[in-house]
Image 1 (cartoon, rainbow, N blue to C red):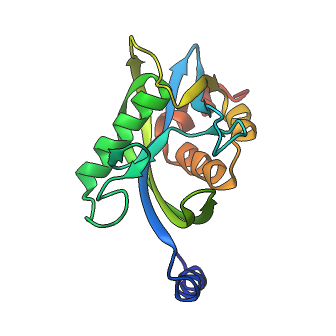
Image 2 (cartoon, helix red, strand yellow):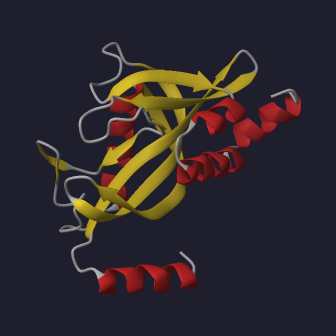
Amino acid sequence: MGKKARQKTASFLKQDSAVLREFSSGGVVFKKLGGKILWIVSASVPNQIFPKLVWRLPKGWIDDEGQGIPGPMASGKVKADENSLKQAAIREVAEEGGIKAKILKKIGTERYFYTHPVRGKILKFVTLYLMEYAGDLEEGFGAETSAVAWLTFDEAYNRLSFAKEKESLRKAKELAPVVQRTEQEFPEL
């Protein structure tokens, strides 16, 4: 986070002490298929709180207490270590993508504010990892997901609902040496 972003965050937090924090982890997952590189995106299940369909990268709270309540690491009461972040990323990719994937590299942590209709203002931290597809899960994706799509980079980029996730997808593509090699071999991708 740059100096201006840190100052803006600090200023915002001083103005409103009711801002909650949330910590999540997830993955930007690719697979090689027939000379192409495809990226996974998943669609949310619309509900009363979030009624719009959202296309996203698979991610979620580091831990939870159930019933939509973030756990001690997800709420910032306990500091998460790198292993906890990685395990949460693997779990969330499985739950929201219905797949197994292996972590290759850390992409980074995005920070943004959003307003939850029930819980109020939230400063969200999302740590994302570049991951490679390792297989489908027999049970498929979980109840939070309505659909999963494997798309080319451009299709995935255009389908994602949020700018921060589009930026993470772009960073993942740049970090993935296998993607760069494949695109040199198959320039039409």
